[in-house]
Length: 220
Image (cartoon, rainbow, N blue to C red; front, side, top):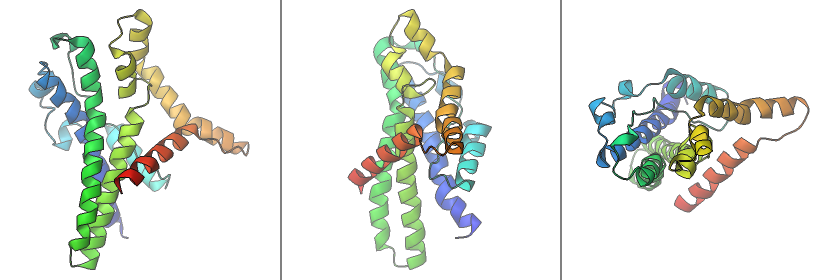
């Protein structure tokens, strides 16, 4: 498989999944009374409006080249003003859940489309189509289960604690820099460090891989 085709069946499905995730947050916020994302032009599917150099280009590219079997990333978060919600506690959960639900929805679409590829008469196009949509399904599942983790700034932290007015809960949800350090440590630093001592322990990878397999087996 040449580089162009590999890019087409790996990077493009991942890019669509990442952008759709963020657009879903903005769309839900807009429906609930906050038009901040719409006014900022962030409800568009145009990648230029959502590019985060690290999360949407560098990290997925490194993961693809490293053959880790895991590809995930993030786009620039859509701007949301929670003060515009009529029922903030409920609406925070709905907006945070929207990205995850969008990825699950797209994973179902990817699974259905992979079945339809078998009706394409050309074997080469059929293979390209099947790989593309299977990857599309898998990337969307990975994003859904990744963002479900209750670690800030991921959606799971807002779903579990974003609605809570208590000081400790708000401090936790807003600890985005610390959360990113924790994610990097869990996903890369700790497993590599333990491997240097001959210990194969990757809790983060185990969670992502097993949840992805479980949901994929249901859809396929």
